[in-house]
Image (cartoon, helix red, strand yellow):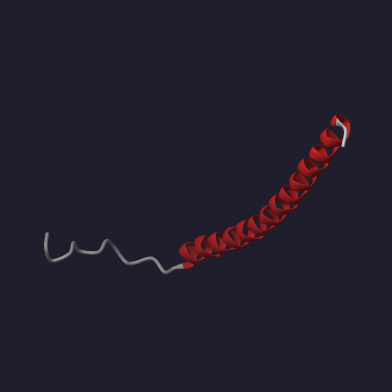
Length: 66
């Protein structure tokens, strides 16, 4: 094997590794995007629930240990 063939084989191996790493990174990024959207929906629901809760009449008295 000549030096040029050796270098080409090395580059092909590196390219294959980088291609696999890019595919895995893309899969993880898509998974995180889905999770982020679910968290945003949950936060929106929580905010809405907090806004729709009945307000207490006046302030609560302090706990007994005060």
